[in-house]
Structures are given as C-alpha cells and as structure tokens.
Image 1: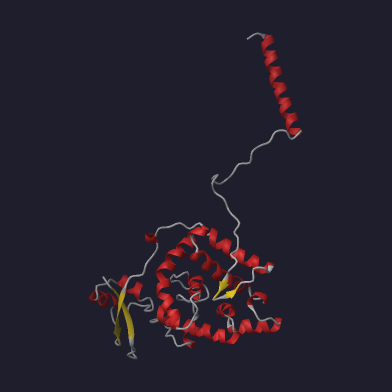
Image 2 (image 1 turned 120 degrees about the horizontal axis):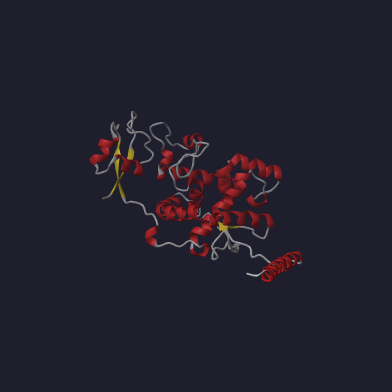
Amino acid sequence: MNKSFRIISLLSVVSVTILFINAINKDEVKVEPTSNTHKNYKIKSLTLPANLNLAGERVPVEIPDVKERMERELLVNTYWQSNGLLLLKRANKYFPILEPLLKKHGLPDDFKFLALAESGFTDETSNVGAAGMWHFMKGTGKEYGLEINDNVDERYDIEKSTKVAAEYLRSSYERFNSWTLAAAAYNAGNYGVSRRLEAQEVNNYYDAKLPDETERYVFRILALKEIINNPEKYGFVFNKEDLYTSHKTTTIKVDTAITNITAFAKRYGMNYKEFKIHNPWLREDHLNNKSRKMYEIKIPVK
C-alpha cells in the first residue's frame, strides 16, 4: 500500500468520526432501547368490573380511593401468577366442601373467598398463631367451643371451624347490618371496627379509616372472587385435570383413646401420612381422649 493511499484512508476514517460526533451533538443518532423481557410479554392495566360486590353489597368504585385500593389488589393477585394459579387449583378442591357448609350455617357463598384469603387453604400457622382454614386464634376458637390443645386442635377440622366462623360472622352482621363490615371485623375484631366507626362518625367500610391490613382485607377477598370466577379473563389457562380435587372419605366414630396412630391407620387401609392428611385436627401421633369424647375419623375410600 503506497503512502498516498494510507493518507487518504486515514482522512476517511477521521471524516466519518467527525460526522458521527456531530450527529450525536445534533441528536441525529438514536439508539433503540433494549428490553429485559420477551417482545410478547406485556403488563396490561386492568379495567374494574362494574358489578363488583361482596355478598350482594356493591363496591363504590366511583370513589377514587376505593378504585385505587381495588385496583391494587386486583393487579397484585393477577400478576402474582404462581400464587394465583395455586389458589385456583386449591379452590377447586375445597370450595365443594365449603359451599354446602356455608349454606347450612346461613352464610353467603362469597365467604368461601374469605377463607381462601385467610389461609390459602394450606395447613400453616400464621406468625401470630392463627391456624386452620379460617385462621382462628386460640382464644377465639376456645371461646366458641373448639377444643384446642397440644393433642387436638379443632381449628383444623373443616366442619367444626366453618360452623364457628359462621357464628362469628353472623354475629358481626347482626351488629353492623353489613356483610362487608362483618368481613372487615373478621380481620380487625368487632370492637376495633365499632370503635373506629363511632369515632369517625361513619357507618360503612368504604368510608372508614381502618388499620392498613384491614384496609386491604376486603379488597383482597373481592379480587380473589373476581379472578377465580373469571380465570381466563385474567390470563389463567389450565385444563380441568390440572385442578386439585378432594378424596372421597367415609367417617367412623371413636370414643376411646388411640395409642398408636400408625397401627390404627393400617387397620383401615391407610398409612400414617394419609391419616394426618384427612384428620389434621389430631396434632400428635396418638389420641388421649381421657374424657371419652366422641371423635369422627375420616377414612379415604379406596
């Protein structure tokens, strides 16, 4: 390569560089932004349904504060996809058990979503000690007649705990004349809600300033109701066989102690784990029963 050609090439590079710098200064070079997500991934704002209600009591979404709080819970529970799908699966398992119990005890069907919001239908104790599907505290459970000790904890008995939840919620409804306030009182207590309503001179949930958890509580119930009743509308796709189902059981009555649950379970075609799954109220590996109380043991039908 001769000297003249090298000089011409160098000048060409310098010229292009100068033109590029000038273009940047004139904002003529535009860099396309990069995306951290797939091109088809979109986070969409949600439109609130016009007919939102809890047990027939309308949600006044025309109030800006109410609209924002409702949108928050709907967005959180829509886009927390893994949790939402698990709740849909579990609801298919437990709603058929709860629905006739709610009807029997005089509660609106919508309160099955309160139970779902409380526990997620998991056998876990909250960080404040609430337990069972309805998340009763020990004191409340005992006050309403549930047996709660190290050996037996009837907060984990679906039939008995649903009966107690219904008694509590009906009592709250009689006090407030509102199922929405009854739901709020399930979270904050009847006295806590009454005191705030009186101090603030209001008479409904949507006008009251309540503790932060209670401010979100009813809206989470409403969001779960909306999503689970309309899963495809919120992007949840599944086949019927993907959902969980309950195992059919039969019941035997026992009024004596059970010294060895493993041996007892084997007599009825179960192992220890199966017994515990169907009878979570028995918290230890034996049943004391010194008082000869009549207990109902559930046996899975093979």
